[in-house]
Image (cartoon, rainbow, N blue to C red; front, top):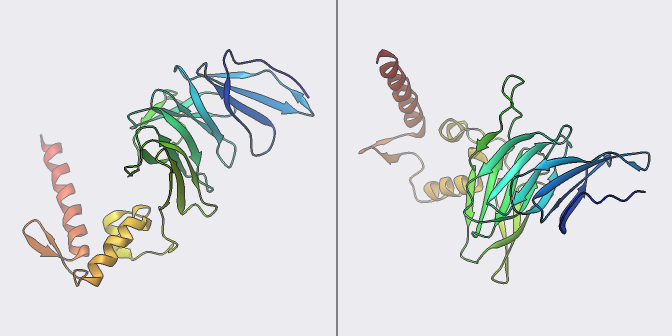
Length: 247
């Protein structure tokens, strides 16, 4: 079809867009490249300036609207696939990131790092027209195991689990979300819609129930039901806001 030489160092990863109309590549030169494809012809490449020494992986979101790159300097970056603009930087890892993947529904990103951690991130929302500056995003969940660096991580087809490959000759399957899409409203009130589906939250609630702690929990020197705790928390936040306003 065509041949391009947009990189000045070895290419570490490349991927087709979901609709097959573009190819994205990254390399040891720290550069990302987007090449549009139309009728068997390669268009002019668009360059993604990651400002890093090396990029290790690149993936499109399932809808093809954005892509994510993983870099040597412990950052993952989310880019607009149409114009190549940087949308957000995902910061939190302490060493180079080897892979970054979108969940099947496109709402989440999982990153695998040499620091031994997996981090789950919410997909960043593109900035408003009036503010084109890329944002810095923190991770939503951190998964750690004492098995050395993480070379690669991938979501299961249903998006509920993540498989990860570790340096210490091990692979782990992490359960992220439960299959239950209708959690207890009391749990949602305390933890929120997404966190209430986390498998670790459900396991903690199961432990509490099985040990007779489900009805009431120790909290601030007394016992409160989950609903009472949520109600008190909302009241406390309103009071804090009123105090701040008065000052």
